[in-house]
Image 1 (cartoon, rainbow, N blue to C red):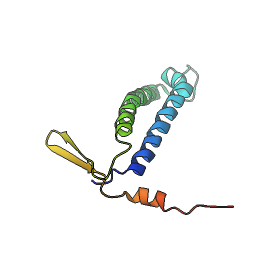
Image 2: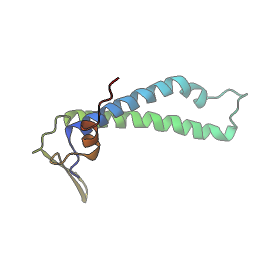
Image 3: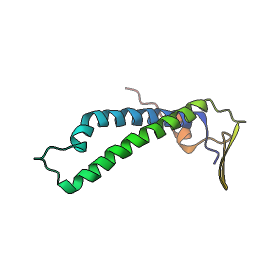
Length: 115
């Protein structure tokens, strides 16, 4: 896995921020009615547990995304000679910025539309 270049990290960083903001907006707008729906609604009593799980899962994912944000922010200016090794028990992940990501190449070489 050598796709740890600057453009890709910054794109992912902005997508994580957008995801956190949209999760918070969704919770503010819909969490109340989904957590405790009114007695007369379009939802059956069997859906209440499922709706509460969705809210709980969204709340759990926000701190995970914030942790991902700090990790990406720390490495947003990765240089081509930097190497990162993450060890998770028996598995090791090696990241280096020595190759450009296909997504980054597409973003850098994208044609500019002019009117």
